[in-house]
Image (tube, rainbow, N blue to C red; front, side, top):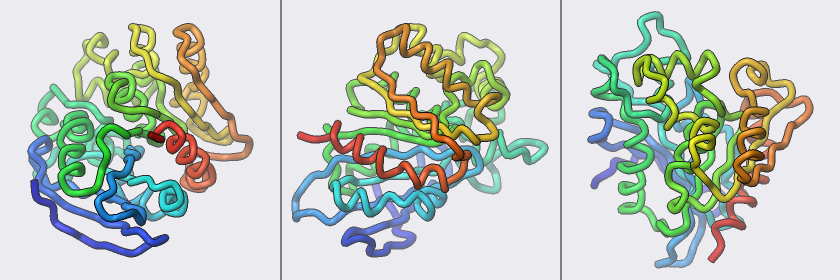
Length: 281
């Protein structure tokens, strides 16, 4: 599986790269970024997957996430894919809305037309891209974890719950934890998966937990000044579901922080140290 190098830059002794490849899952070219920390020749390193939120590409966290210093110190590979397929023939929202279509793939495999052909982000981030990264970078496939922000927090938590033996840790910044119950999620899940709400449950963190999915534990940060906290994020629903199911959850409500990368970058180091502990050995 071949990749094209878009750019590389040395950072904290490692290499921050951006790459492009032809995706079979989406039928489009896809761009992703990988930071590889300094390491001994022949060493295999743990990998942290980062899923971004609405309107984002790989570039948002790559440019603003402030993860490289911690990854270099901890010996973590950091991978950031795009949030949707892109291209002139890829359908988007008819009204060019930010919360559906381009930049808003919601980490599902769409079943509804005209989106089913390209919007296969679940297959992309759980199957195709991991194989591609493992074939081109010094990844230890036995030491993987996943994290994300907002829509990407939704993606990270659902991916972990459905693949508990693959990922040793999962965390999120301001995740959409119950998309079946909030405007962003209802719009996306209806558009991509149709009106049968039973089909939504496998892409809803709270519903997955209610239906018996388990994971070793989550770290979640939310900003108390986040404009989306009450209507779209509803972390109290995750807290209640985890408590009932006996899933360890560290939910931190951060006073004064909003939904932005100022918030994410402030606590990125905490999350990466938490992941590193889980990825040891």
